[in-house]
Amino acid sequence: MRWLGSQGGGVDQEKRLILRFLEQSEWDDALTGKLPHFDGFHWQPGYCARADADRLTAAGKLGWRYLNVLQAPCPEWAGGDPILDRMAALIPTLPSTFPWFPCTGGIRRPVYDWRAPAQAAIQELVTMMARERMPFFLDQFWPHPRPWMCAEGNFDSYDPGTWVHWTRKLNRFAQLVRQRPRLGSTVVNGDFLGPKPVMLEHPEWWGRFEAAVEVWHEHPLNVLAPDAGVPWAMQALLDLHIRYPEKWIALKGAPAAVVAGYRALAWERSYEVWQ
Figure 1 (cartoon, rainbow, N blue to C red):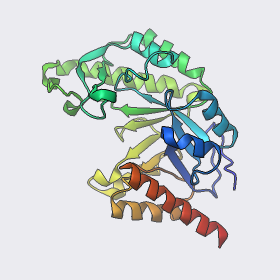
Figure 2 (cartoon, rainbow, N blue to C red; figure 1 turned 45 degrees about the vertical axis):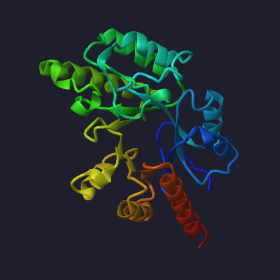
Figure 3 (cartoon, one colour; figure 1 turned 180 degrees about the vertical axis):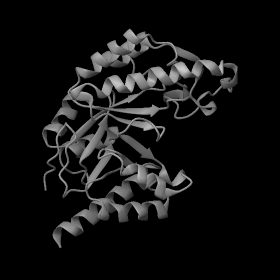
Figure 4 (cartoon, rainbow, N blue to C red; figure 1 turned 90 degrees about the vertical axis):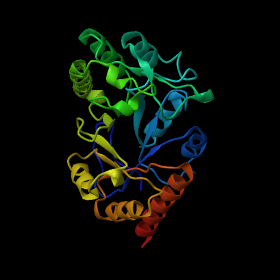
């Protein structure tokens, strides 16, 4: 039952495609085959060694390197990674911090100002990314910023007429990434209207869950990622998991619920395989 996909984005139509963001505590089990089944993974420097990510891709897993395009890295992550360090040099930050998911010690992360970088800086960043040997997972990809992104409540103090530059440059960044063969399978997560493929995170928050499923079908690498702690959403995912074996799925939510949810998905797969 080895997954037969490729870094180019091809998938074996007979497989269930499960995507996991591997926590630091899960890497040993992932590398030794003890982690419940998964086909793809996100990884980022500071969570694992690059050599470990390469070992998983050599074993047939599809890997995406994680990169947050909204927030500057936590202090414990910065330094030593060429891409994160170069982003810090090329993209200035707003005088605002992100109110959610603080770093160690409660430190809030600065928000990148995508109105500011020059086109040459964006091109330089994409060139660096292309030296990686796998596509990226661009998290918090928001073509238009929102007030809830500023902990200080000063979003309204920015000139609203300047956000168009943010939209143009961030979309240009994604366009340049997709033009690189090694990066063409890059997935964005944030605004579900962003350039495909996208990760449809928390679709149970949408006004209509079916609308998320419709978007999910628009690209073979789109990922549907409901909250594992919402029973009806989890049941809907299990049903879709059986009906559409060629589609990527993932889980979000509290760690315990996510672990239990992946176990349920792995059990369903094993049950189906052995019948």
